[in-house]
Image (tube, rainbow, N blue to C red; front, side):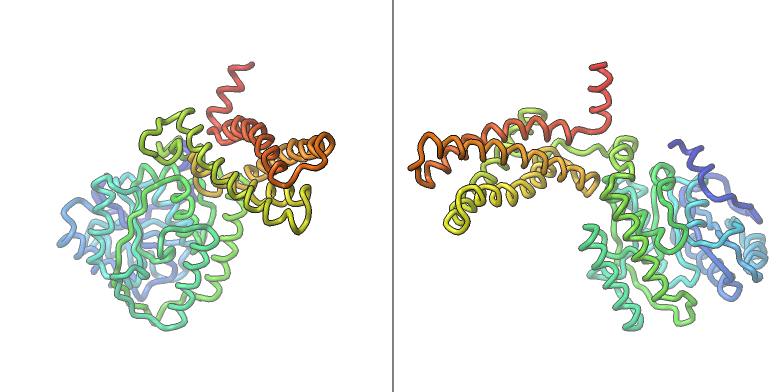
Length: 423
């Protein structure tokens, strides 16, 4: 999706006031809803910090989402008074909607945001945006859960925050530590490509952005922050947590079913998956994939043999063969997916396991028929002879498995090209 399409996909906005310079390096957004008591103090303090501590051009954008009080009028007055501030109004509520609309249209190199209460110490702003300015990272987040962070807040918020981020790490394999800290920044060119795929308009916006960014392969920098809870905050923490869990279920389902175009996004942004982990002396491409596949195959065969011999005494040859194959097939598919073919994340993981199940059925049929043939022509063969025949039969199934997996784990672009070539 182009930047123009992304801009059209964002919510309509109205510029109320603008005393800023065009195309700054940094555009820091303050999303607000009915904040007439805090907006003036926030803008004055933030503008002073930008002038004194940030050595490049910066704009403050007030993103008002459907306020019904005097927030917009006060912000416009401050904009005219001290300069460097743009005030934008959206007719619909939603913190995520406001951020997406402003970030998608920004002409700055870096877009960021902070909460109006300025709970996060602004001294973390330069460490937040430095990795983006240097090109080292694509996205940067403040973390209240990092080792060196200093946080003052009540036990209820602390418990909910840590529990929520634990859920993200266990269910979505999140590598970032704090999804909901109101202090984030992003390269604008990257944002224009990713933001159209973020659908949440509320507080889950941050989490959805981070989960997709991680799956796409964006580099996320974390900055420990000093953070003091605002006791006057009107955010319903429990209701927000419930909505976040619903968002997790929605995004998790989309990732499991492959409806989010993660692979296409990787290619578009230039974060194509690697062909697999580097191994000393192992070349890339087909030879490298085959070498890694053989490593996985050897380990799987050993695991299969051990399981077969353990189960043989309990359930007999055929059932032992079936169970040992079933267990090692799931593990083998997962290992080859990540190790041999370099597929990361959960994109299409369910489909890949279903294919692995199909290969398992084929392998089981080959090995089961091999046992039937052995027992017919050599009825007195012991379990070690049975195991030798099964290993040979598994070699046939393994060769088929490699060809099949190599096709399944190719990128969508490669499969389309191959199909068009055949046509």
